[in-house]
Length: 227
Image (cartoon, rainbow, N blue to C red; front, side, top):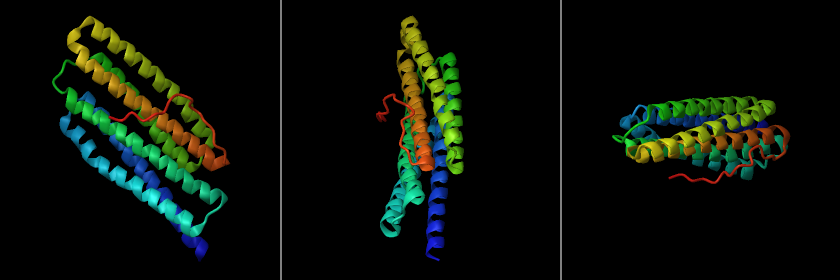
């Protein structure tokens, strides 16, 4: 009976983390759509909904600590709880970056826009969203091999980031009226690139869950620069 209750709690933790991941992925999707489509109302939805993501992260952390303190889990069970604690923190930061993109939408509304750059940003966002979906699936399946593959996809996100940066610099040099807008494009670019880094973090925790080994798949800086 004791083991069954513990397994139920562990499964509930697992489900709640997956739900949080879906909430974050929706926030990313909405924030970029709002930015590209100049949709101030949708951007505000993302900002308002962030409190739910924050509450879910706090709830997961509280439940995790309680399970460790009261159940004293070992080996695989402990790894799952630690993975949820650490990965949910990464998800929360990803949600913060979605909010930052939404705030950029509100800030740049009415400034000179650049369709070509926005299209590239949309492509980058699509790739990031795909990675988030894939990493959540890899988590559910505890798929170490897939996690390693997803982490490599972050190189494509970095390529998008470099391309957008160069496009923005060129545009600012050619037309000073686009400077304000270009700065915001670069900010959104950096937020999406950071989300890609956090996906890589979650890949590392999936590998830890499966193998018990802590490895670093992405050596680039992962400091949190949320505005």
